[in-house]
Every structure is written in structure tokens, then in C-alpha cells.
Image: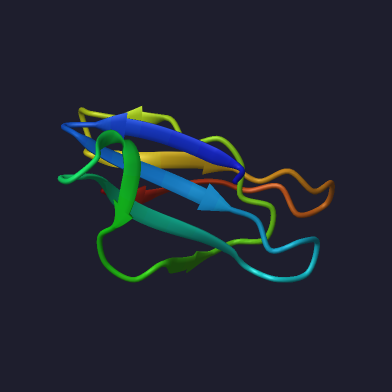
Length: 81
């Protein structure tokens, strides 16, 4: 896991794919049976750029932002929530 943020009871997670493969963005919900201790995947993972990192949430635009980590490949961008 590279980044996480939560809003409105949902968690958004990012995982890396190394220095050459895409990262992934995943939308999750707390599992109803276990409560907030376990997250359940809600929809397919979305491929995102190489080196995805932290995930701050911007409520004004309803977007999750990230900045990538690898020198020469750094990008700042958002994805819709």
C-alpha cells in the first residue's frame, strides 16, 4: 500500500507497481459483518500512473489527488472519487 484516505465512510487506497508498472487505485467500504476493522473492495481497481503515492481528498472537487515518486516521472494529478 502506498496511500490511503477516507471520506463519507469510504476508503480509497493506492498500491504501487514498481518503477515500470502501473499503480492501482481502489475504492473500499468497511465490511458490514466486521465493522471498520476490515475493508471490502467496492468495484474494480483502476490502473494509475507509475509511482502513485499519498492520497489526499479534496472535498470541493470530490477528487482524490496524488503525486508520483520516481525522479523524471513525477506527476501531480487527481482522479474523480
